[in-house]
Length: 258
Image 1 (cartoon, rainbow, N blue to C red):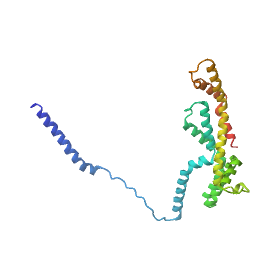
Image 2 (image 1 turned 30 degrees about the vertical axis):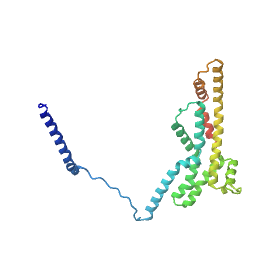
Image 3 (image 1 turned 30 degrees about the horizontal axis):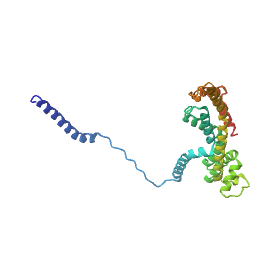
Image 4 (image 1 turned 180 degrees about the vertical axis):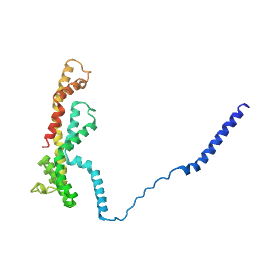
């Protein structure tokens, strides 16, 4: 025990010196650390009307970006595309292939391709004149809605449009221009959902036949414990590859909008 006393004293001395070093460190570090920047937000007086215009344009752009997902889903071909691709994946039986991100990306790029003529008209008749200050903001919005409404009218069934007109308690309009956009949008969405489900049903039929044939063969062979999905999946993938399924599906979807 007496032999350990010098060691214990040495340890206590080291700990005490460490504590003194830590207590003295802030005074040294305070002089060496860099000052932190401070950010101030405030509202000042604009020197010219151009500064106000730029600020309003930035605010309008941020508003459009926040509404972009809803606009993309409600007023374009994206809804039909993503639903059909989801039906196709379920029909094939590959629940994770292709991944959902791939299907969404493919639907987005096909949406850009299908809607490019509409967006070209919007840029030519609404955005470009507004940026050149030839028309006002209200006129730009009216001109931008015209090609979009024309696209939605081509894909909307009269039955769905009449349904929402009756629920809105409106008389039958004499022209398409008299139909409010608030009535056209839900009618367009319902029509897109119906069309997508019809295409999905047609896609299911050949793969359903393969599932029935495989199930019948396995049942006749007495292999009731073997899941038919394990046997039918390679045949469904093979059929889809042999008929060049992606070419047929994508081509038919794009042509259905024209």
